[in-house]
Image 1 (cartoon, rainbow, N blue to C red):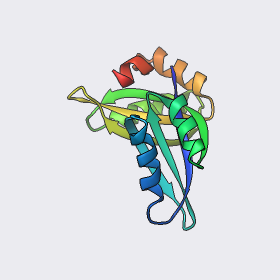
Image 2: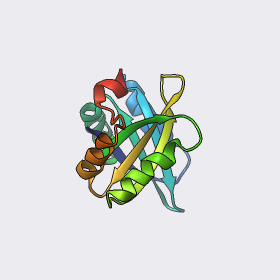
Image 3: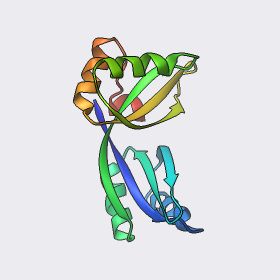
Image 4: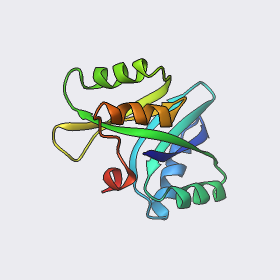
Length: 142
């Protein structure tokens, strides 16, 4: 199952992240997880929210450049080797990982890895065939 992620481009200056967070908060949109990568001049904020269509609309109306990306969220054991198992499966399927970030899940011994793959359908199929839980939106957002 693929999940929609917002990629928001922002200047690498004080206050720009605050504006994005305020826009989401003002529209009662909760951030499930995020990742921020930067260069000297700009950053890319990757955000997963339940109300991704509304979030994209409100952020664009506020003047932000927003792109939608399909990502795959995978539930893993929150222990040494949990991620290794996943990347071994992906490597064997000959799928490239473009980026990944993680967060702990509401289940005590589980974590979630969020992947951007060059072929998300092939990756998700390979993971499911290996009995890895590829999360649907209903599981991620509860």
